[in-house]
Length: 479
Image (cartoon, rainbow, N blue to C red):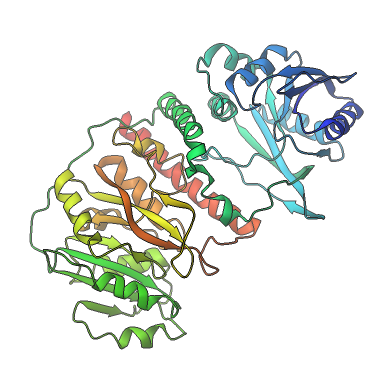
């Protein structure tokens, strides 16, 4: 059994080093360098393409594959092979019959060599930025069928479509061993990278990724189609809207958040429920100093609550209003009209959920890149489908209370909002407001400010699991 190898150009010397290492393995067959210009190596061919991730690039790989497997490494960075790396990948592929195999790796970052475990793929691993490591092994039939069955011409989504295509043809298997060493060129923290996809320059890429994901959802019987269910708002409630703020140890910001909510100007009565999750700093004292009858300061009896659990406490409180509107304890509404705009949107669109847009800012409320996060990739026609590809739905989020009471939030402090957003969008019409309603502070106490690789992996695994659950629910709807 041989493996044909396809590697992206990463500089003359670096690429030659990778070729030499591949040649040292008795399993390597033909080697091709994927490059935007013709490259010359004595023992490797060249596939000329504008970008290695394009559909055309993957099809060139498929057309030149002769052996049973293809090793594809498209990151264009210095790559070192671990001991018997190809042999290990080939053995796992043979033993499992996997359509695609990938592995953990070591990462050289700022002079240090660090473990970089990745996570297991699951059906809900639909993010186009899922980390498959620096190199992946594909069965030959996966690429040969891709060559004939994928007709789209994408500049950015070709490899993403290949991974989805592979998942439809067999198992995608992770080897939890560091088989490669990669030099990391993007040394930003995960919290600094997470909004790259909303940059104006990324719009074309996002459209392609959405198209590829939509095709995949249709192929596996999980694609939703409008019209979605409209909401009616009967019955009486203590107030028309309730702002909900879960909080624990935010004495530096809770005052700003509370004032932001109480200063809202509306044509209807509203209140504010702050669920104080047993704060141990000055948060509780600050809240007790607020003398406004609209503020309900709750301290739960339970001591095992995450953010989602705190939301459920507010949701089932007898003073909860017809609509519940999110405000995090370190964020603020953009102006005094936000609550009115959200409730107007509910009534205008007869939707069960409204999602707004937010402006990124620093702790002192100065605007910071990337600026406005408006999630314009969420369209009325395809938004609920595309929601399975992205990692968040936007803010502020607001819900029709009876629908949210039926859905409930997971008792976690990460991803709880995403879980209910997916579940509600499966059935109910969702309203969107694309103007900035919300100031989202980025500072050192954010949950996702600077997670280490293990925390990030845990977060990604959880959201992938949410998507897997939601995917199954949508497949059951379409059958």
